[in-house]
Image (tube, rainbow, N blue to C red):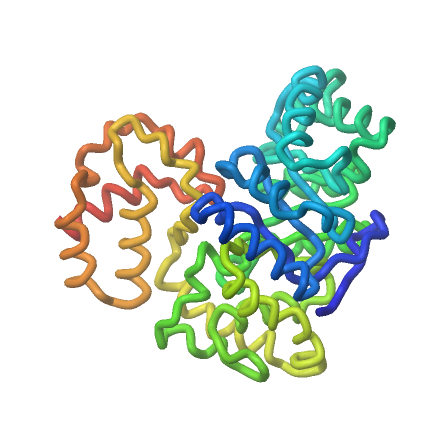
Length: 357
């Protein structure tokens, strides 16, 4: 496993880190095995959030005496300093710890939201107070904001790390990653497999199997590790077996150093970006609370699969079996507001229904 400095925090973190979004889908026993296997394999950065189901509880339960062996990071959304204090106390209990190595300002997706968290009495003030008390060691920010707003967050100098959505398929923040690196910020990548798409076992993505990478998922992670500006890539791990696969990318920098692999893979991926110009759903499910009861992410995923693989008939059949179709959309616009990828789900639902119905 390769370890890199997480910016000016001084922490040396594994280039592959544990993301807690997936473990709510498994039992306590499976989660325990996954967490501990990750530590055995050299993963030392663990990231979670209160919005990830019972992820915090399961991580706290699983770490036990091994808490000292990892850097633990969680986060929360816009709130006042007073509300933050209540939230962090609850999080510490769930995580069974008395301190957090990193605390993230979460889901700061616009310039306006950025200004709210740094305002007097806001979230950042609460986190800084927690730092003074030793409850929080370092502060970072996570964002899906427009590029200009992200650059302002980096230029502010208020955070030791920034978490950005970046992978072989989506490279909109490439320049911001360079800027953050120049500012000595830790760069944490979320969505390294683009919601699992790049880990697909289909032949379309077999071009990722280069060098030591024997699976598409490891190949996609290998591409990220090939960028020395990236500190770590968060992978949603839910089983010990999954950990054993993705950890292989942790020692692959030498495998692609001084080669043109990174450029070659980017050119191959460009073909898929060209057939999916309106974006690719990553199954974050922030659109889950649909008033019409639609599984928006499933419909959007079918739309993406059809465009990339050309499997129109298969997708039509799957759509026909869905209990609720996209024509039930009330056009309330809530999914458009909540989508961190700014994919305009409401418009994509219309397109999908026209094609599949």
